[in-house]
Image 1: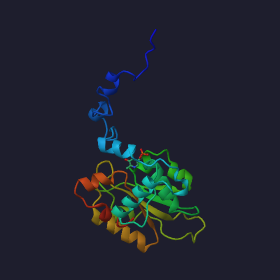
Image 2 (image 1 turned 30 degrees about the vertical axis):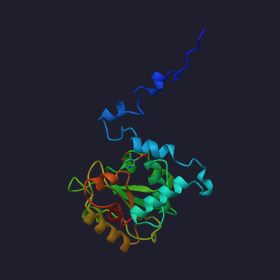
Image 3 (image 1 turned 180 degrees about the horizontal axis):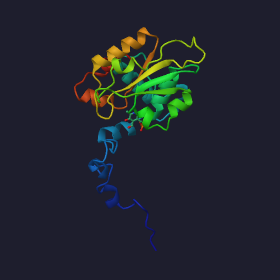
Image 4 (image 1 turned 60 degrees about the vertical axis):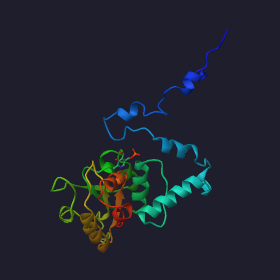
Length: 217
Ligand SMILES: Cc1ncc(COP(=O)(O)O)c(C=O)c1O
């Protein structure tokens, strides 16, 4: 009697499969997150050092962080497992002790798609902004709603962070407007966060290089 073992025949090993070929995910157009890794990505994965990075000794993690930091023009980077985690860690790090608010486009991913985690963990009130031009928020959208101040009034809930997103649902945020908002924020002691989960789309569209697009963040 022979026992059949899955994957044991050479036909199964050498035949078409989703790793060696584009696979079904390559033709799934329901959303841009339905992707499959390219051969170059798989190659990088198989060559990654698989050490525990708790003591910062995993060379693949460190190289990736340093590479992306250099592209962004930032002093250092931190690899996280998802965009949701990136928003949560980044925004929480910009905040200290409530009360405070985070201002963002009303369509922001962190407001509409991340189970409210940022606001729950940071104890922040969301200040959603609707862009008057139906595309991207401008300084003029922000000014009537922003709460300036540093908690001088016991009942105030000042805006501490403006969170931008580029691209936002495919919309490329014009760099000039991001700079106006950034200049205003910095002049008023407000921090600026960029959800750059889709930043590469903005780069691919020709809107700028990562260093330029991340200048204010
Ligand atoms: C703009 C934006 N931010 C954050 C996320 C969350 O990323 P993840 O699904 O890796 O948690 C996404 C995911 O599509 C996104 O498009």
